[in-house]
Image (cartoon, rainbow, N blue to C red; front, side, top):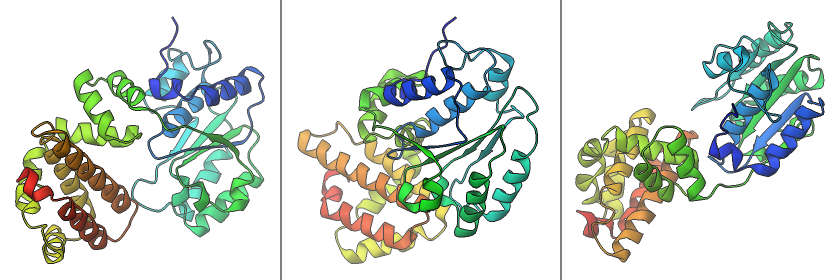
Length: 317
């Protein structure tokens, strides 16, 4: 049976054709960089390519999704797949050293091992230098994949040793299809995609906030009570201090605020909807910056001033 390709992967048709050609001609190289705007599908395509490299029974030049190797990969239990996820931290040299030791081992199954380093720009300088040595002398049976939305933050010495796969920003329709593919209801998927500005990652966060009924939390710390104090710079500063400096809590509050604002969509005319959508985009931008380790209070003050300038408190409170 033909495996179903995730919509966000299928959308990157040009990159997909290139990768299939590499697989079919048996000329898989040592290192690849998947890059594009945040949430463009780079992570999904890199995972799919890793699965294909390890697949035991390709279908139409791509992973079958059903062989023992694919089943292990999809359940995150494949012994020849090594993954480093940065999340909200920096990747340190000890992790790269351990990765080098692991990559030097012979594959447990098949003929290759695959390393995937997500958000590669979050390597600190020492880690990047150690990673460069791995790229300079890669184990013959190891394929290295990296993803980043900020390739300019990687050393040029690292970039020069990677085959770069440039990806396009997906339209709302593709993001919605991807969310439905992942099990979401069509209406919720369409709504999240419309607000996500070309990022499937942002769409997932928006949908998750709504599904988790975060709007209630947003009403307490990120909704009417907060918005009513944003008419002045002093109010913005006061609100930022009220939220504190606990990064995880602030991120949760921003999710709550997004959900609260989403609940206000459709309550007014086009002008109101436009203001609320612009406010949601501002909240998303602040969340992305704070997730990337930006100064919390400065980001919040900037956000709250923007929300005040929009006149949001007069519209939704």
